[in-house]
Length: 616
Image (cartoon, rainbow, N blue to C red; front, side, top):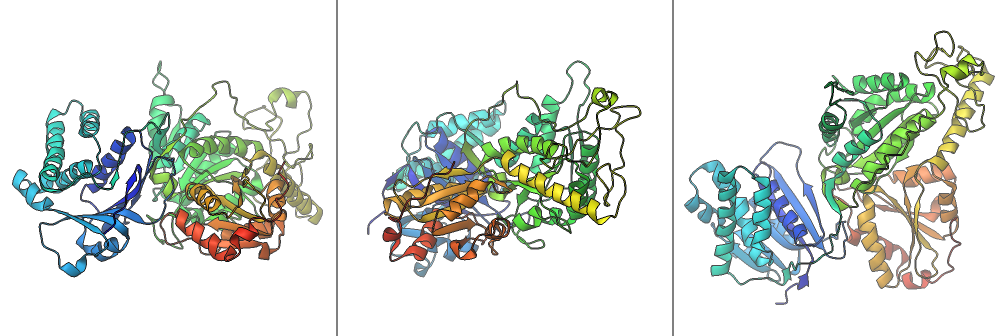
């Protein structure tokens, strides 16, 4: 039987039981590979209950630096009898199955085209430990030790990680090192190693950092000037305000006086949280909330108020599977329509689409500027895959000379000089009015903030012309936003093609690999990564310059495609749906197969068609 042979390029998946302590051990394995200088991209696929249900941890080891899911599994570490059959079925032919052989398994539970490695983990653990909890926890470290020999990962890498984690706690350090070597010693004595897949020291990690999107977003909000957070706990966004509080304790406390220059409120529900944020934004503070789909559903009335009253608000939406409670611990890009048009009536909101933790940092900071500049709610549309999984990304950089963009805020001096103040008046042709902050002037610049119709000077009015003026001005402001938001990123194929693909957010890592593989196969595709809504004119040109444009997204109803058709009035027949929505992150193989199915059998011929004009 052939075996998969690969160095620094394989997928390993751990099948465990939630609450067993396996997540820490699996993360230890991923960090060890990274310390060997090899890029690794792990994903924790976990249930929404506390413990006892199946959980998986998939690590993509890839020296080329692909961070997306490839599809398929080269090695399965099967530690959960509940999911055995499905786990074994995932393994690629010639791949490897590692399992606890303490209890014999029937022959029909194995595959003839997979290499089997049984190790009596429970027996080894029970012989070394008497405490039930220790047996449960150290069993995980023992199998990590076994894998370190099978995959040729140096023991000293793990020992250094233990030393960092348990500094000053020598008892825990010694016990973890002991468990590691129990696993290593067994493999050396009883099994053939290394396998055909292995890790070799490299230098491909460079200066990249290893972090998750939620922590990055919280830090971006700190650097972007946020001082107020109001939130209600909801998976998978809760760690954003938690991280924000940690960073506030470090950066928002006056060292001389001990004064806390921030306010964080855990509200009684999502309605209260968004209400507090709207109030803080009206008062001049940079304020945000973090939530997920069900929270957005509850926030829509306040979002409509903020849109119509033109109050800066930042919302970080870490998307999950819906509708209703849906799949709270699974990922999707399924809140696009609900956020873009949140509230009743003619409402449109700005959306930003970060692709990784680095852009969670930059886009969250940018969202605060945009909210102030545009005087409107701005959504940062991340998701569980980016938010809760650690990823290698570029280091965060901040220019200390950067000034916050507070937009059109009229000063006391301008008011005193007699400058005309019409709170909802378009004086510059960009749809954005001037505003004042409470307390700016003792007698000038005041206005009544309302959710009802009014004239340009904020006076109550139900006159049709006043309403139309205001609604058309809001539309001009939205058009202005298209030039202010982060612009699309174009990747042109190396030769002429009539095929294009549009994608965004967490589809990006898998798309990068898919485009490379398609190119190697002779299928050339121009690619445009969206970073924001509203769509700049370059998106319209990209679609017009291609005969067929694939729109890749992780939801059932092709929400991004619907927005493109609705906003740009393009022919729907030009936009081909590529939809992935089982709750797991999209894979490169899924994208490749979908594009092949659409262009085959003439895929290579289509790719040779006329190359479109370059975007400005």
